[in-house]
Image (cartoon, rainbow over all chains, first blue to last red; front, side, top):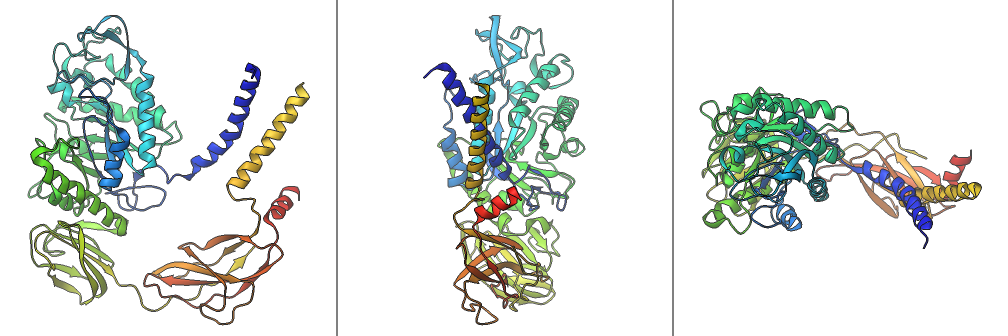
Length: 464
Length: 126
């Protein structure tokens, strides 16, 4: 076949399948955004509240520990084994991790000269296309499984606590050909003035790579310390400003600034969602007694920021969910859970169960209450007169304050993962006592009983 | 040579259009009926069912003698395709609530079916 004929065939194929491809892209549910009705939660074109839950681990994007993650297996772990809907993706462009040098960096190593790790110096103006190809491939693969992806743009913990003199960190003195010499953590502050130009170019490339996808949200950085506040604000502003010129605008989150940060900085930031550390106004804390979400920001509570891992268990997941918050889990790679296996498996299962109830309920109309006058356990989501989800974090009977009416009930045993009883009750207004048909943690789901009178026949039938 | 290329491009674009229409069900071997109705005002309405057949119904409430039934879900419009060309069909709609209690029929409407490719061509060349 001649070269001209091949070119013609390629040209015609582009015309043919190009039209087809354009038609297919209109089938998505719309970009993830803040629910205007219930801003504790995300939403999309459906208007339904979307509760995000899932786990994450350090090598789910970059190659570490000398291996490449089997991403398809990892997706099976999310969707088949555990029924999650959210993945925090550690893309962390320039992470040093001196003791475990990652093999996937966003910048090309062009030299001339060698960096401190003995390999060619980085050119911060030259982005590594393989890195972005992998990013798009993984975000698309996640989308195909119905997963939302939190794309972590930068990683701050390693920058502070996992450096050594020979780690070749791209932004450090002598490791790049661009004259950038940030050192230590200053790359994540505006103190290292030259760095921000290259960082924005990298962020722009990430956005260009994923802007057309609906299942994406951004995270500025994992645990960049308190020194990073103005730098994070700059990145958030840049993302919002740049995406305003593009077809889609994605939400961006700011997560706890370790070390030295405070949750008040997160809540007063220009981020759309936040991940706090453990601290909250008395009597609350995000580990044992989470404060009810008030809708001022979407809150994704991530056990990564609650203290030295492994934090959180099934009880924590249910408490977090019934306080109107999203629960995600700092997981360990499958097979390396060791002594934490039972705790971790409980949390994974609970995330799947809470997601089932989030989808089963009309979550967008439900608000959390920690008031014992609404439910004596203080863990309940309510749409008074319509739906109630109550979590019992200890054992035994509890009260729920109901609006008079007929309700269907469902007892769920979160320990065994089974529905332990269903039925219908007719309740008077006020407190009603419920006793779980099993001991230990319990979940009660009440829904207004459907009207047993048939609806009216439809009118205005028209046919053409 | 240029004229030949233009002809080839026109053929390809026509093939594109045909492929697109066929793939998205715009051109099918049978005809179609597009139904719409008013939404019910009850809060607890969970969906609508469409009943149809080639003979008028014999009762005011389901099943009414209809030969086919479709659950349209919680929508107030629906297209039924692959209907037999040249045949007259009768349609009614019911509503149901979350307890699966179903209403009696709406008014009955009928439609004589033309092949949808004919409808499409009529629209294109009218």
